[in-house]
Each structure stands twice: as structure tokens, then as C-alpha cells.
Image (cartoon, rainbow, N blue to C red):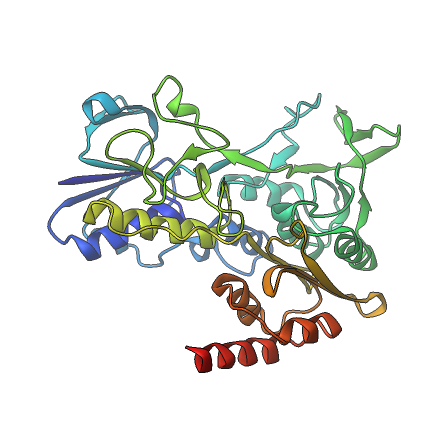
Length: 418
């Protein structure tokens, strides 16, 4: 049996290692396009600020990790897949046969159609090479404009502040991290960032980036111009799927997979940021481009590739936890609420604290919070187990921060009734 994994991110590494745990005899090949060993993009901001060296971004620290695990790691790029003869083609011209194939090719940055994006002083922060170029451009005191204040943007944002860069953030949405935070939560995050010296523009689009030899001019739709030495584009990501053009694998927002991580092509699975899998909260499918989901996808896909689809996937919980300049924000599940549901809210603007809980009957289905990070594991547990809250629902509505008491009380009641 030859297992082939296209990609070398968290989903791919988790899958390769788990396949080897379950099947010690078959061949496992992992194919990664980057020059470095597999690394975590979430660690790149720490590399930017000097908290870790490049090696500190690697998913596994040992130089011989993959060889020692019996995983063949191939530095190349998959350019096409041929399901009809169980093969794939590489950029080097090589063709590889597989018995089972996992597509774990991740995501790629979305580049907005704005004139001037081709200037070398305009950078994405997606690869380690990008980070190295930004380090050269973003010296202390440099003027930087960051386009985008989504999840990844707010991770990167801290790097610029720690590098003592004069930072302006431009976000086209109505608030920072609009896909993760509601109006009050996003407003608190913006106020917090502004208190740390960051200039934030929301509901604002970039019209053009104009270049002179000395500096860049970021032209906003309002007519305002922001001078900059470097522009960082962080306007979201999309699944990387170009290599599947012309391939008869069903694609919607991402590669469509079933409960066993299978695509519509025989013996081909998908996992991670390129895969559109089951959403725990909605029962529908979605792309959840976060590392915990990617890792879980990889392990479940591996188990099914080896065991012929014995392990159904319960679905990924839409979950984001973000630390921006010391302020922790988070969202879980159906944080925007459900039809006919109830909610509870606590808002302490002066202390940068906010929590919002969403209920369906007496089940907690979602949450949004700022400045409150105690008992997040219990909060997630209440949502994932769908445990009936009973009288604890009314208590949480009266005081939404009683998460630990509600978790213990509801589980104790459940054990007594079982």
C-alpha cells in the first residue's frame, strides 16, 4: 500500500504520523512545496518579532523526524491529479502512483484587485520568505499600513507593534475580525488597539497603492492618503485548489468531503484548510481554516485511509481564540445565535470585558467574548457535548460568567439522571 499526502502543513503532518502509527509496513510519502521543513504559519508572527528563530516555526523540531518515522518527505509541488489511474504529477515532471491519496494543500492568501499591489514593498505575510522580506522593510520607526484586520491580520498586527512600527490598519468590514466578533466585541478590540498606538480605519477600502522611489501612498476610498514604507496585505485566505482544475473532484467553497473525509473520487481524501467538511454547529459543510481543525481532520482522514472508513467525523466546531496585544478575544460555535434562541450578555466597556452566550432551548450553542478567558475549555465543552443546562440556563442568563459552575452543575445533573 502506498499512501501519498499532497501538502506539508499541520493536516498533512498529523495524517502522515497517524498513518504510520496505524500501518507500520506500508509506504508513506508527504509532498511539500516549501523549501523549509513543514512549519506552522501561526508561528510566523513570533519569528517576525524575534521570539523564535526560523527553526522555532517548524512543526517538528528534530532534523530527522520524518525519516525516523518512516515518512518519505519530498520537496516538490503537486500540479495535477489523475484519479482515473491513481496518479499525480509534480512540478519537477515526476509522476507518482498512489493507492490512497490525501489532499492537504492548505490555503493561499486572497489578493484584492487594487492597483499597485505589484510593488515589492507590498507584502503578504504567508511564507517564511515573506517574513524575511518584511523584517528588512519594517525597521523600528518605519511607517506600515496593514490592509485587513481579520483573524490572521490581528495575529500579525502584534508583530508590527512589537517591532516599534508606526502602524495603520485598514479594514473594509464594519469592525475588526467581523467574521469572529459582533459589534460590541469588535468595537472593544478596536478601542484596545488604538490605545496601544495603532490607527484603525474600519468600513474603509483601499482604492490604490501609489509608488514613488521614497515611499508608498495608500489611497483610501474616502480620498485620504496614508504614506507608508511597507504595506502588508492580510485580506483573508481561500483554499488552494488550482492544481485540481479539470479534475473530476467536487469543489464548492473547498474540496467537498463526506463524514469519512472522502472526496467524490475513489481513494482520495481531503483535510485541513482546503477541505469543506462537516460543521458541528450547523450540520452543514464549511471550510474552517484554523490549525486545530486541520490537525483533527488529518488524524481522522488517516484513520479512515487505513481502516477503510470506520471512523465518522463528528464535525469541526467553529472556534477562534485570538490574543491581540494582550487582549484575548474568542468565538465558539453559533456565536451569532440561532432562530428562536435566547441569549445572555455582559458588557464592561471600561475594563475591556464582554461575553455573549447563545442558547437553543437549554443547550449552549455559541459564545463570543473579549477580555474573558477563564474556563474557555469548559465553555467549549458545554457547546460540544450539547449537555442540557436545566436550571443553569437561567443562572447563566443572569450572570454569563458562571461558566465553571454551570459546567460542573450540568454535568453532575447529567450523571445523576443517567
